[in-house]
Image 1 (spheres, rainbow over the protein chains, first blue to last red):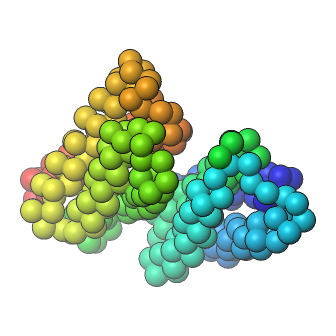
Image 2 (image 1 turned 30 degrees about the horizontal axis):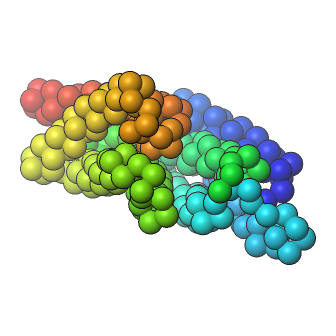
Length: 122
Length: 137
C-alpha cells in the first residue's frame, strides 16, 4: 500500500459518497456522475490491489497482519460493483443513496487498511 | 409514494438493507479472521463477534423477504442486535480484558463509527413504520 494513494482514495470515496447520499435523498436517480464516481472508487481499489501485490518486492511491507489487510481489500472490492449493479437495476433515489453508502464504506475500509499497513504491529 | 406494497424492502428500507449487507460482510469476515488467527487472545469476544456477524446476515435476509414470519425474524434479530451492542458496549468499558478493542460491538461500535449502535434503532423504527402503514390499509 502506498500512503498518499490511500488518502486520495479516501478523499474521492468520501466526496463521492457524501454527494450521492445527499442528492439521493433529494430525489436524483442513479446517473453517469454517481455511477461513474462509484466505478472510479472501484478502479482506485483495483490500483491499490496491484500496488499492494507489488509493494513488498520494493521493501514496502505491511507492519500489521497481511491476511487481515487482504481480507479487508477483497471485501472492499466486492462492494462498489454490487452497489452499481443495484443502481442499474433499480433506478430510483434510494439506489443513489446506496451508491453513496457504498462509497463511504469504502472510505472507512481503506482507512482501516492503511492503519493495518502503516500503524498496527502484527 | 411508490405503488409497491409496503414491505420492509420498499423505499428507504433498501438503504437499510444495503447497510446491513455491508455490516454482515465486514463483521463476518473480520470475526472469521479473528477466530482463525488469534482465538486464544479473547475467545469470548471473538465468538460474540461471530454471533454479531450471523445476526447481521439474518437481519439482512429477513429485511429482504416479505412474509410475516420474516418480519418477526427481523424484529427478533434487530432487537437482539440492539441488546447486544448495548451490553457489549457496557461490558467492554467495564472489563477491557474480556473485550479487546477490535470487535464490532466493542465500545458501542466505536470502531465502526457507531453505525452498529444507530443501525438497530433505525431498523426497529423502520419495522414499526412498515407495520403501522400496513395496519392502516
